[in-house]
Image 1: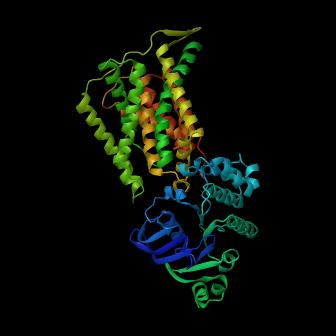
Image 2: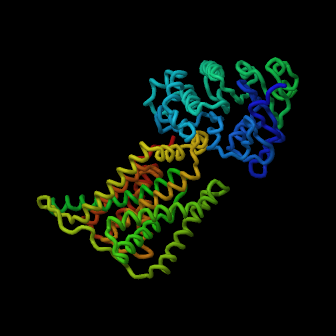
Image 3: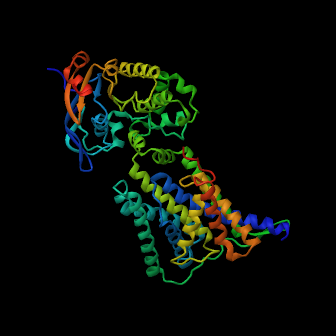
Amino acid sequence: MPEAPMLQVENLDVFYGSYQVLWDVSLDVTNGEVVAVLGPNGSGKSTVLKAIMGLVPIRAGRVIFEGSDLTRVPTHEMVAHGISMVLERRRLFTNMTVRENILLGAYHKSVASQTKDRLEWVESLFPILAERRDQIAGKMSGGEQQMVAIARSLMSKPRLLLMDEPYLGLAPKIVDQIVQIIRKINGEGIAVLFNEQNVKLSFGVSNQGYLLEGGRMVLSGTGDEMMNSDVVRRVYLGV
Amino acid sequence: MTIYLFIEQIINGLIIGSTYALIGSGIALIYGTMRVLNLAHGEFYMLGGYFVFYLAVTMGLAPWIAIPTAVFGAFLLGMAIQRTTIHFLFGREGWMFSTIAATLGLSIFLQNAALLLFGEQFQTVPYYVSGVVELGQVRIPAQRILIFAVSMATIGVMTYVLKYTRLGWAIRATSQDRDAAAVVGIPAERIYMITFGIAAALGAIAAAMLAPIYSINPWSGLPILLKGFVVVILGGLGSFPGAIAGGLILGVVEAVGVQVTSSEWRDVISFGLMIAVIWWRPWGLFGQKPS
């Protein structure tokens, strides 16, 4: 019998006010996997990740992680359960230094005592951030800021990392670097769930994908299955 | 005007300005962290003054016991007020206006509650220290030096807390990005409550230090609120260091301005300065120009 997936998202309904943005969305992430949520602009990709993290209220459905129900757990307690997140457009504390931003990633009491070890580990993954430690985060380039955001999210040593549009607004060369970083993170045994518009780009790093259209999950499968799917072509090209 | 009188006025300005800085930094802290404009901030000052009066005069406690107790009381009151009012509005539709309306209502409520509880007579507290310090030709009452010392020490402690402590990092992080702070495990709700408590405590410290000079009455919060607004506009709304600088500048400009003109011109000078800043640098003297 295969073991239960690490993350099970079951039948999510999400509303912004009275406006429904997700209908009955379900997905699984298996331990150690990289999973992509795909879909065009406005399809609700970001909302899926935000709902898992508790940043938007869930009207119906459940979020099960490692056997516990996290549906109603507030955002600020998620790191204690082993889930961390890189928000869309980095969202650094722009007036603070690189080091301060990274250290804040270990703010939660459940991880604060291991701050020193975590900092060593994170800076070994991103040596450049140790060099730039005293720079003001807001003054860095987009790619460097994304690195700081990822480093910050890793300070709690999550078992699952959510990444909201990790490639957004970055130059192609930098996107390649971020792809490498996601592989590296995954190599550390951390599962990654991220969203992205570009199907081809997504399967450069993920093994499994889900396709959203208008707030509904319309397809799931491996990279090969999805790349050759008529559904993907219809959703993106409207043919 | 002799040079000594001029120096004396500058020193007096810095002394009163240091208490303006305490008031302004409370408003700035709340605005910076929550983007809530707290129109009841003057009432934190007024109630802090009454707390000191009741502990130090009515109960006859020594000032060094009465003042910290009053400040702690204001801290608790500030947290309770946030939790019972702003907490329910914050983040909901139209909260930027509903919180302004709520704090205005709170201000009126607290004024009338004070009137009911403490009566309308003006109260004062005796000087905490007596004597005059002479520096050459310049004479300053020891009481005023104490005001300056306590205010600057408070500002020093607050700066340290914001820069180096876990709580301070959490406040700064929440003020910059609430969601990002929540994601790393910072409970924004609790931070907001504590921020309100701290702001109320800062107001109470200012009240405690000014109580021997200015009288305490149910309406003494309003002029202080207006001063606080001038301070945060000078310094840049929401900026803690800006509020400190803004407070000191306002104090000196007022003191020297009054000396040059007359005391009826005090408010004209401070609001004139505020209007000039809004006109010339709407983001404040120390704020950053929004890009």
